[in-house]
Length: 514
Figure 1 (tube, rainbow, N blue to C red):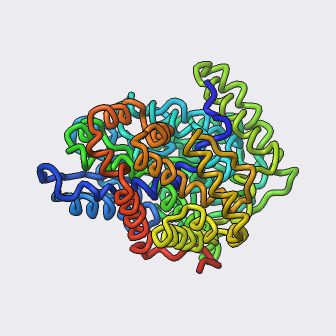
Figure 2: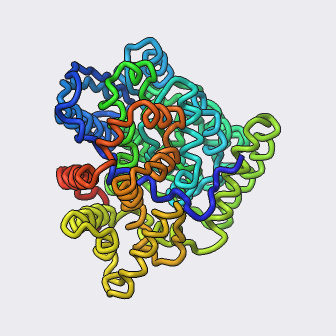
Figure 3: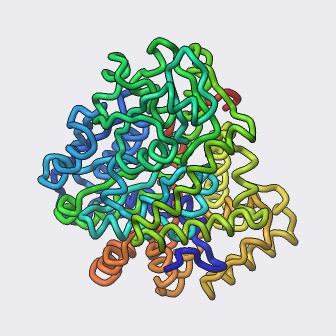
């Protein structure tokens, strides 16, 4: 059941989909205008990066609906006012909410394949997470979510999960943690997989109870991302928090639309919204990760202590937690295939210095992400001006501006149009980022010139449930052609995406961001 695909590995789709499918305004003026209401629930407090990401999504949905003639009303509910994650899931199932954003607390319940993903010290960086998602794991999750009654609108890694504690005495070893800490467990199994092997006392809590129990002194430790610590203001408690690194796990959450709501939406709107996924994932993930490091910087400035453990100290934490993976698999044999696929994928990621790994390691803290967004916008602008995918790539990397290199790039796109295969190892790292952006345009150009939509359909199926894409391409080709089927439509997709990028006020949270 391997999700690691050869050669044309769909790393490119997360960014690439944004170019072509970001909104779908090509449907403007078609069909029957409808009143569309969307109720969105999230634990993210207003003003945090989580809320800003929600607002960016809602803004995109609003603009999309208006431009195709529908009146869209969005009702966001921040800060858990609709309850904690289990409550919001239940409200979604009975129609009181349309979109929910589960994370480590409830996502494994909805998507069992995610459970091993959260095992401590398995997925250790955003780069590893992206590698897995781009090479098939996101499709696994999307299919499981679909069976559970939801459409996945995005997978976001909100931040690395670090251990935060409040104690007058220092905690640098598991033995000290057992004696001094009592940890909040608001996720169930993912937290159990850390606290139980280490023997750290824990208290089961619901999400809204966490800050209260900290203030009452009933708990004094939490395993969470920085956005969580900021959101519930744990950093303001006394004694001041101390943060232990290295990180125990890579976070992850989803934005899910109920299938009941999806089925009621007009097809022009639902197809456009469903295909917003990668642009939102690329931009929002970058913002989340940039803000993650910015929040850590801010808390340190406020007074939080950051303890970076030595190799020996890290080993004392890591060894029992990694050893627990075997116990976990014995207790949960159905998870073994998913676990093994993750292990295989990470082995491929770490086996050699792949372009993917090199790209991530050049900006581990996402300091340069705002500049990358500007570069993406510039490349799309070049494509609109010249109609050349190769020249758009050369804008991302001047090394491809020479006539000889342009011919190589043009040949690569032509091979992709003819075979659906692309050898990314033949090119430099920055080109790979450009290819992710421009890949869907190459498939759409074939559709526009020959009427063969096979590349577009196959490409969409890499991350969206097969049933949804089959329905669209079998019964709604009018809408599909309006999105991809003509040169004018392709240009419109690129223009829409460029307008979306240029409308964002995000310039970077982290120190050093421009």
